[in-house]
Length: 203
Image 1 (cartoon, rainbow, N blue to C red):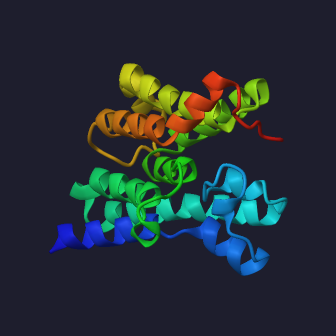
Image 2 (image 1 turned 45 degrees about the vertical axis):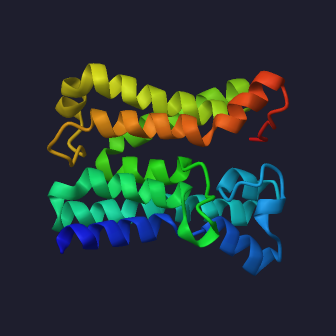
């Protein structure tokens, strides 16, 4: 029963389409018909409404953070499963024929639940790469790779200075899975980069 409950609320939380809901409700637009067609904050920003983009970013972070924190508190043995299902809920939401977003903000929310140090490392890396290359996709892929590599080689070091690492088990496998999924969700962006048609972001 506990497993079913964790699966239900983790996937359900991740599958809430905040980008689509906010742009339709407040802007009368379908974000799927704008820019890249993605439902995430970066594409919402392309509508020209920074406030909706900011709200989408925050809510997408929270929908990854909240279910994992709940699971940590009540069903700690299912934390990694909860994290994975929240992420899968975002990229494969039932409500729009399993065509969701790329999962970057939701991934960040999950990181906040697992480790503040890792989440701030992700943000720092994302911002630096964005300032250099101006591509959200490159920043997201490189940042998720950085998190995995740092955790893989330095997990003992991270634990020594990060009291916020709330998971008592090895999280390297789940971070590797997230990196692979991040590559999957950005596969079109990688192709666009190869063809030099990828859209840059304005910071």
